[in-house]
Amino acid sequence: MSQADDIDEIEGLDDDPITDVVKVMLRELGEKPERDGLIKTPKRVAAAMRFFTKGYGQDPIETLNNAMFDVEYDEMVLVKDIEFYSLCEHHMVPFFGRAHVGYIPNGKVVGLSKIPRLVDMFSRRLQVQERFTMEVAGVIEDVLRPQGVGVVVEAKHLCMVMRGVEKHNSFAITSSMRGVFNSDSKTRAEFMELIRHRPDSFA
Image 1 (tube, helix red, strand yellow):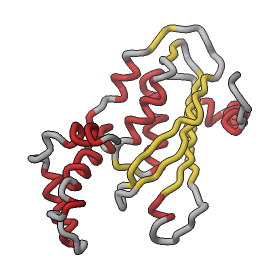
Image 2 (tube, one colour):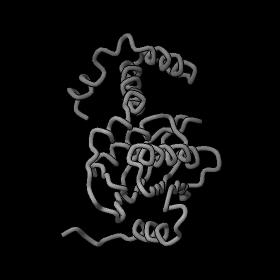
Image 3 (cartoon, rainbow, N blue to C red):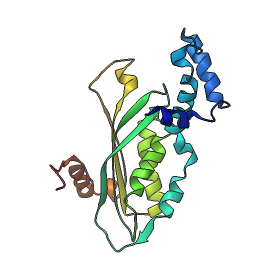
């Protein structure tokens, strides 16, 4: 980030209550918020936290409703390897990874770019991976009314890496299967096989 970008990001945050909280935290940690390297830190942290949690101000249902189309297509639609970054609600440290989202339409499809947007909206909140996975699946099910939807999330949690058990190579996998993804083993197996496939290139 350039100095100009940094100034733009923190401009107008003097009255943000998060800045006062950060100053108190710095003092409690043994630091001096007024020292040169930390003078702008409270504003930077406030700007970062507002960005990391901007999903609270976004409506995922509205996003999908504005991009639905009538299409007679009844095979699986899959968007995989969607990168996401979130904050664990227990320690407010990051967890991040990939989400894979598939559904079988029932007369309606949604613009493909809206699925990553949906993942971003729910990840940009204080989260636990299990709820995050179910929220993505639930909105697609409620809005599109597909024959089925499947969501798999793979994530590394820094609360497990930097503290606690300190297991650096561990990651968590969660899934939510709805409709035919839950009732039909063949559909579920196809979905799992597709998300495991890694194409060499898209030449």
